[in-house]
Image 1: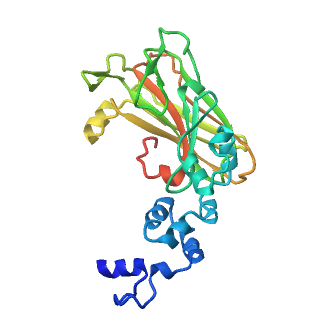
Image 2: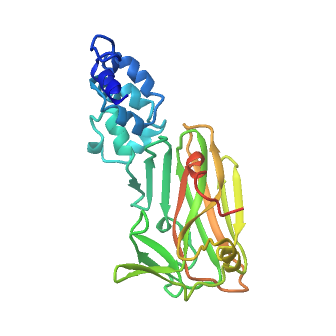
Image 3: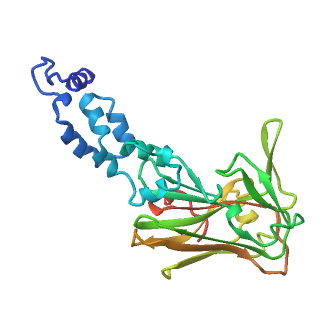
Length: 298
C-alpha cells in the first residue's frame, strides 16, 4: 500500500505502471477547494505531498477561509511592519501567536486548529481590593503564566476582583474562566515547591463568580475553592495546581459590534479572613475549545 501511495503522489498510476493519473494530476484549484474543509495543521501536512498540494496550501483563498472575521482588528494591534505585504497564510501564522495589547496586560491569538479567537487578561488589568497594600497582596514573578507576574493574596477579609473588556469578537459562543492557584509556589534547587501556610478560609464560604455583557447577558456560579474532605475522597486535590474556574458563557451574534464584558470574583463575607491564593488571569475562548477541559463550577 505504501508503494501505491508513493506512485499516486508522484503522478504514477495505481498499478505502478506510471500511465495512470495520480495525486499530482489533480488541479490545484480542486485541491484548494478540499483544503477549505480541513484544519490548518492538516493543510500543512498535506502540502508536503507534491507541488499541486503545496501550491493549494499557499492559496490566499484557502487561508482567507481560516481567518476570523475580525482578523483586521487583530492586525491593528501589531506594528504595521509585522504584517505588511504578508500573504493570508503569513497573516494566519502571525495571528496564531499571542499578540499583547493594553501595555502587555492582555493577549489575543487565533487557535491554530479551529481558527477561534482566544484571549487572556492578566491580573494586572483587574481592579483588586487592597492590591496596593503589601500587608494583603504582592506580585510574584513566574514562568507558569502567559504574563510575567501573578497576584498573591497573603490575607484579607474583603476579597473582591473586578475586570472589564471591550472587544469585537467573531460570532459564536464563548466561555469565560478565572485561573487560580491555592498556595504560594516557588522553586528550590530546581524543583517546584508550594507553601500552604497562609492558605485558609476558602473552605468556609463559596466564592461567587459573575459575568455580564453590554447586550444584557448574565452568568454566575459559586464554589468553594478549598474542599479538603471532598478532594481526599475523590483523589482530586486543588491545592498546588493551577485550576480554571468557569464562570459562564456568552453569545456573540453581531461580529461587527463591540461588546463590553464585565467579570468579577468575590468573597466579601467579613466573618472570616482568607488567604494563600494566587490570581493569574481571566481567559475568554470559544466554548467548543473550553468544553474539552474539566469544569469545577457547578
